[in-house]
Length: 240
Image (cartoon, rainbow, N blue to C red):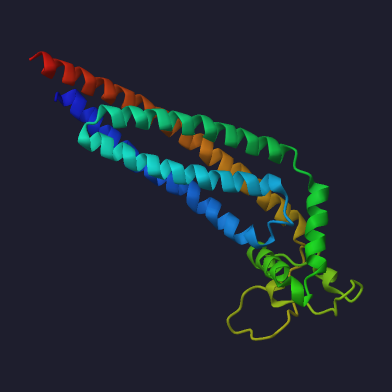
């Protein structure tokens, strides 16, 4: 095997290693987002859930394909390398389609409907049979440093089922504070922050998918060049 073919072989192997990391880069943030909203997925809009689940699937497939690409490069297998390139091209097309779909859905994001859904969840905050909604609201308030829908006044007695108590998730985290309720809550509401977070998350995942698509295109080119080199080497060996 010539020096050029050897370089292509190791470049392909290194690419597949990087490619497997790219698959993890898709899976990890998508899984984190999905785990945080999976318990309330029936109440959240599908234009957030669908791209996240789709990218988890795509990332998993990418990771598996990268493994086969590494094996094909090590074994100098023309069949495995060509199969790897075809599978990678299929993933590339699907990934671009998913990213475009995510951007389109986020562009048509229905803010009014989203706010209505979040308010319905908030109204069930103190209900014992709606603990998942309470966990989600607490997570949002802690992570985004906000309180209520428009502000801490949303916990007042004017709202049915509320007794005016503000939960500790509305307060900055203080290990020394062992109070059950918050006395100095965040002044900003969560409605604006939650909508902005989901839109940003969708754009981030879509951007990562398009960025990785460029890396995949380079991998396809390397794979086809290496497969052609293997075939030419086999022909020369057969003639000899």
